[in-house]
Image (cartoon, rainbow, N blue to C red; front, side, top):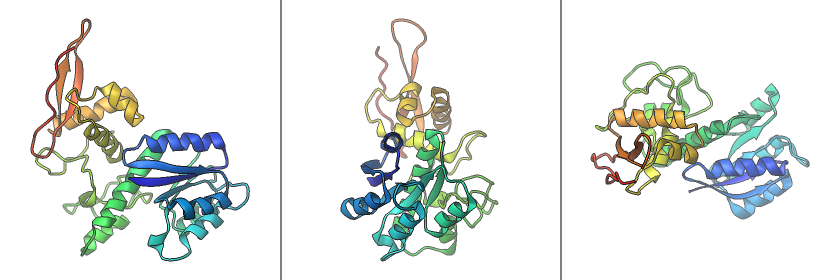
Length: 275
C-alpha cells in the first residue's frame, strides 16, 4: 500500500484530493495538512511514500518545501513528491522538475487525471523495485528515452514514450499489463483508449473477487469514470480474453451484463445468472 500525505492550504480541496487518492487501488491517505511547516513535520512523523504538494502555502513556498523533502539525506530516505497546484508559470514548473517532483498536475483538473498520475507513479515505483541487473533498454524505458518493445518508435503521448515526458514507466516493466491478451502478449489498445485508464479499470475488475462480478455502472462508480467509458474498457478486455461476461436476468428489462476477471491461466469467477 502506498502511503500518501496531502498538503493543501484549502481544507476542502485537501479533503477532495484525499477522497480521490483513496479511490485508487493500492493507495491510502495517512494525513492531510495545510501549511509547509506542518508538511515537513508530518513527513517526519508519518513517513509517507508520496506527498501531494501544493505550491501556494501560507507560510513556506512550495518549492522550498520540495527542496527540503528531496534535497536532504539519501533520495530513498524521503518521500516522492507529486505537485498539485494552480501555479502554471514556467519558473515554478522548472523548479519542481529540478527539485525532483515525479509529476505536476495543474488545478483545476478532472479527478481522473490525478488518478491516472497516481497509477503511473505506482507502476514506475514497482518497476524500480523489481530492477536487479537492468539492461540499458530497461533503464531507458524507465526514463522514457527509448522506442517501444519490438523496435517500433513510441507514439507521442503514450505513457513512457518520448512524447510524454510526464511519466517514466515502460511497457515491459508494468505491474499490470492492461493491454495484454489472454496469451500474455501485448495487444495495442483501440483508438481512444489509454493505458492509464485501462490500468485503472483492470485494477478495479481484478479487485472484485465475488462470484457476481461487476456491472459497468459498478465499475464506473469505483473507478471514478463514466459508465460509458468503463464499459468500453471492459468490453475491450472481453475481446482480448482477459475478462468474460455473464448475463444476470431481473424481473423486467434487458439482462444486465456482468464482467468477471480472467486470470492468466484462463479461469474466471464462477458465473452468477440469478436475479
